[in-house]
Image (cartoon, rainbow over all chains, first blue to last red; front, side, top):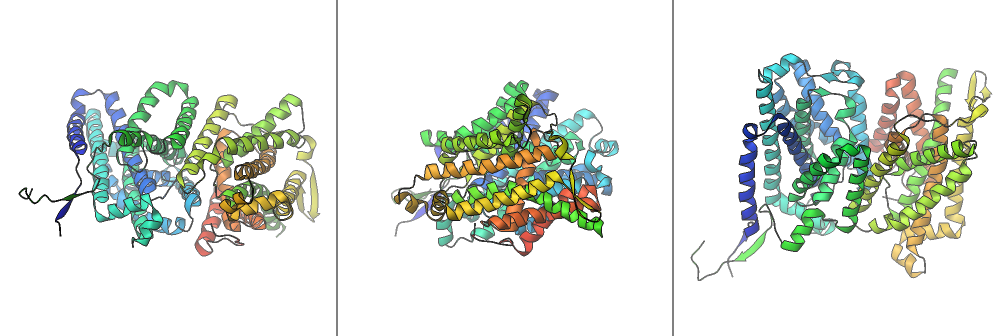
Amino acid sequence: MSEHRVEHATRSSQVGVALIAVTLIALALAPFWGDRQTLRLLAEVYAFVALASLWNLLAGYAGLVSVGQQAFVGLGGYLLFALVIMFDVHPVLAIFIAGPVAAIIAIPVAALTFRLRGAYFAIGTWVVAEVFRLLASQVSVLGGGSGISLPAAAVIAMAPTRQAREFAIYWLALALAVIVLVAIVVLLRSRHGLALTAIRDNETAAQSNGIGVVRIKYIVYVLVAFGTAMIGALIFLQKLRISPDTAFSVNDWTAFVIFITVIGGIGRIEGPIIGTIIFFVMRQTLSDLGSMYLLIMGAVAIVVMLWAPKGVWGLIVERYGWQALPLQRRLVLKDKSRPDA
Amino acid sequence: MTGWFNVILQGVLIGGLYAMFAAGLSLIFGVMRLVNIAHGDLIVLAAYIALMATTSLGLDPLTSLIIVVPAMALIGYALQRGLLNRTLGDDLLPPLLVTFGLSIIIQNGLLELFTADSRKLQAGAIEVQTLQVMQGVWVGALPFIQFVVAVAVIAGLQQLFYRTALGRAFRATSDDQAVAQLMGLDTRHVFAMAMALSLAIVAIAGVFLAVRANFDPSIGPARLIFGFEAVIIGGLGSMWGTLAGGVILGVAQAIGAQIDPGWQLLAGHIAFLVILAVRPQGLFPKVSG
């Protein structure tokens, strides 16, 4: 019997990890080289990278195409405001409470929406988001339909000066995005990740190999709700104001996120990152066009879906076989003549 | 007592409109397992085409159907032939994402062309005419016509499905696409005909929507959700079930609105979620999705 081991890393992933490490250090130091505008923009980029990565895990790997993730973005935002306003919780702590609470709420939501299959599941999740939006506008303590601002006292409690606050939110956004990405990488490298990849490639085959498809989908849905709500809380901490229409906006938190993932490359971890960069470059150059810009985004997404369904990163992988993160599994047979490596 | 009877009756009548939203959705799902996320935006598009027809040709809204229905059917045929047929297959994502993209394109295209202003079709004297049903209960002529048309549309679809060659082709491709093809059916054409029919119904629904209330480019998704809820409440694949689903949704919303105006939409969604929890196959199921 030959000995063997499973390798994750390739040369490109080693280069990729090194590049990512250098980039991360540069980004972590951004408060020292960037102006206020840059910091705000980058924080927004991180939030979208995280949201798109989470949606990618849900739709690209677990096959749960949700168009209702704004339910959890808004829920996270509203939980933050509720905790700060009604229970005097520190805003940063509130972000970390919003995650688990949203995960608990996601359990019955999944139980209901999982009764719908395929595309009907997608619209079912949208109904749930609508219900959340309508319920939020009924809560008069949180401003009802017109929304509410974060009390000045709580804002000052975070950090005394405006600059310190902006730095804090920036680092928080970067940290959260990194946590979300690392969590996804760890999940995908675990045996559950192998199961998820199998489900992505062929659900029926995965099931016939003994993978508990429904259970894994359930777990992924709840975990994604956890992460999405934390990012939602962060987004509205940065905005300092929340209203039902902005918190549960299907355009902002689902349409953009889906376009980012599809254009970047669905079902690959690098896809949402590439997609977010493309999205923000497009937004910075086309934003003068107003609604035409959304129209172009929609058209680009359709073209990519029909003619390059694996997205930009998919094209790169096909052409060069790169992977930026060590996720692939390769079987390496041990060479007897060499000492154990 | 007549107060509540009145509320429920108005809910039933608006349910006819929801059933029309749902019928087109249900039809294409039945034939090609496609869920059209842009369905609601196409309803709004039909309303704007009717608006153009009435303002430029001076037509009465109901007469404008002569133009709007064929126009939408043509759009449906071209859309399916040119774009949506490419997305059909085993993978769920392409049809979903392409129709989602289409929804965004239609919404923002209408916004570019017509701005975000609310519009309404003026139907003239018929808008204020009423019929007395019983002591103290009156029904508007338009809601009544709308409901009768909805019933006629559903009955017509039922006839078409079970009595005509086209209906046979729809059922055959729905049952087994490959075998239907072997029997000489051009499935690309059959799918395109189904979409044309779906959008013809959308056209009727769009005109009634535009006469009944104000509309603007952003209201499409909510119409999609109403149609979808009516389909699921009624049970997949059942045309008369779709009518029942629309009526239940309309009545739930009317009762909710009576209790508190803020509860109108919420009551409809809750009725849907309750049915999903206790009877996920819908009230009158025919096929499993």
